[in-house]
Amino acid sequence: MSDTRSIAVFPSVDVLVAATAARLITELVSRQAGGTVPSVVLTGGGTGIGVLAAVAASPARAAVDWSHVEFWWGDERFVPADDDERNDRQARQAFLDQLEVDPELVHAMAPVDGPLGDDPDAAAAAYQQLLADRGVLERGFDVLMLGVGPEGHVASIFPDSPAAASQDWVTAVRDCPKPPPTRISLTFPAIGLADQVWLITAGGGKAEAVARAVGGAAPQDVPAAGAIGRSATWWFVDRDAAAQVDPDVVG
Ligand SMILES: O=C1O[C@H](COP(=O)(O)O)[C@@H](O)[C@H](O)[C@H]1O
Image (tube, rainbow, N blue to C red):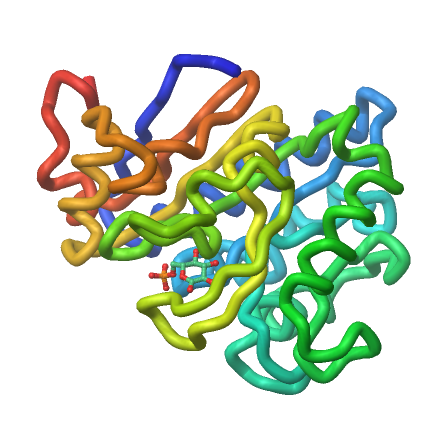
């Protein structure tokens, strides 16, 4: 785990989204050039889905062999498969459906109406088993993207949630303050498997959470503070989201 956190502040959300999309493409190109099938963890949320849409809209997307990229999710809302609240549904519409991906390498978390039934613990256990079966627990993820909520949640780890203390890799989360209340989430140990963690967020409503997270808050209080990659932890934020960050931290 690297202690180094880097913050890139962009002049607007549009620039943030375009620059992060370009960076994702470049990262995947270089990892594929190194002979690996990169694994990417996708996020929900407005800015995160915006980044995915920007990748899909970029002519540079043709530089990536999308059939040799493995996709995971950081969290999912435990609702029916065809519910528009699903993070995987939003990512498919914005991004995956427009690329030549290998469906065998796209790993959505189970919906409430799927074959595993309506037990979120079973859905979490199945995803954890899949991570183990695919070798992720040894190999890790390449890039793990996270949105950040206004109170500092990442994935579906909310402040003061038992999920913040979970030592499983994947957990069911109940009674979430943001609807829908039942979710499935990677935990901090799983997030920490990523080579690079990217926290992507925009807007003044996120400013306090960003400042507290990069200022050293406890992950139980501000979960974004606990999302740390093995090699790198990047914050990609717009000016409004960075407004309360100590200028010494931004550099
Ligand atoms: O509910 C969720 O919210 C966060 C942040 O979303 P945003 O719209 O405030 O950026 C997101 O990262 C997470 O994946 C999602 O399930």
